[in-house]
Image 1 (cartoon, helix red, strand yellow):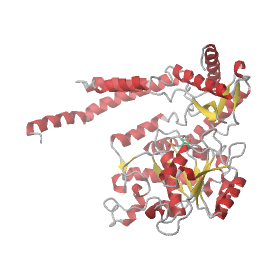
Image 2 (image 1 turned 90 degrees about the vertical axis):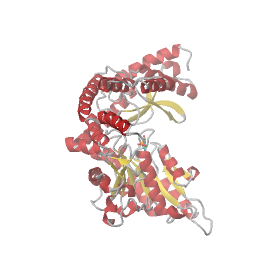
Image 3 (image 1 turned 60 degrees about the horizontal axis):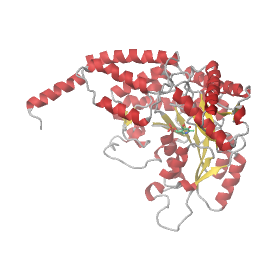
Image 4 (image 1 turned 120 degrees about the horizontal axis):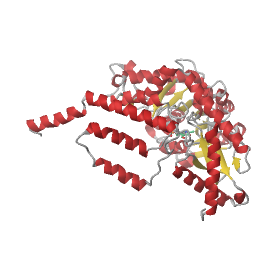
Length: 505
Ligand SMILES: Cc1ncc(COP(=O)(O)O)c(C=O)c1O
């Protein structure tokens, strides 16, 4: 134990760390630094990606840990600047990369209220307002899906992957009654065939991973056939289910996409739902990316039939332009909300107030302590209204089309599909590459992209299309312009010429 004097000194040190005046001064500096950073990003003065080799970055980060200053007020802005200077600039309009947006900046301020005051939940009384905010958003988003208030249920969790896991675990517990307690094998008795799950052929890897986690096994994931636009084919799904069920196979769920990751294909949800209904199989829709299109009068038709799904995942940190992580899981039938986790934790969930369990987030989510992940969304919605979400979808989805048309108008770029949203996969095929074998063409795309992102001029991603390397953009910064997209093609051409002159690929 510390003696009295040492305790006092330690408390003095802590008092300085918790001092509201110092906090106020730091917050003012923080606001100024971030606003200046956003301005520089928007004026395209920063590098999109500040590329450094991982080992160099880690060494540098560690060096800072030894740089403790005797004057924290003076040191604070240096630390913030370091974070900004080394980071990835998603607010740069030439960030056109992963399905991670340039978030609405002010959403981060609302999130920060939750972080600074540590608003968390597990049970209602831990975070009454944080819980209320989530429930209000669940109500509104569920209504966007097309459901009647009070007939459905929903929750917020840390990302689409955890969302898929949660939704599919619920499906498993419903389809294989008793599996929560006895395991998937079904306890004592006659051995049965291992159950399967049917998954859109291009589904995000988190769906197959969920099958592993929930004890079905990744080998029990059956891919559903896709049509030529890489959408789930309802007719073939019907045939697949008919055959499986005739063989006595237990099918936990069909997992459809709105949209699938590789090229942003939206499945025909209404037809898929009809097939699932006929066979009595749970329908899960991964709308992590495309859910927000429900706000758009022009694009909501892409999700027609989503209201027929049993569970839906919808990420606010994708196309609602929120900072990570904020994802929603919905159940069409409210009665399924407690099927996911049937455990009881009496020290948390107070039997003397049983009605309260309805509002205890820990009953519905894998997380126990869970941050107030929806503060950013709730604050932003309260400030700007839902028109903002329609605008964000309309602008970025339209730009996907604009980019596609630009690609079509060139001799040396090939779009790999007609986009339905803001995801576009393509290749650069200069004259020298026209008759190159697929592996050379694929390697050329990958090396081109590496040079592009290391240059700091743009950030795009790479993918595989038909087993061959390709380039892929997600236009997920609403400040990206058609000129930026022209400039991307110019830059890729320039780098392509350089690359062809060098030895690689
Ligand atoms: C369709 C789809 N589902 C799920 C995910 C995973 O979401 P998260 O990264 O929030 O875990 C992604 C990620 O891009 C996705 O595209």
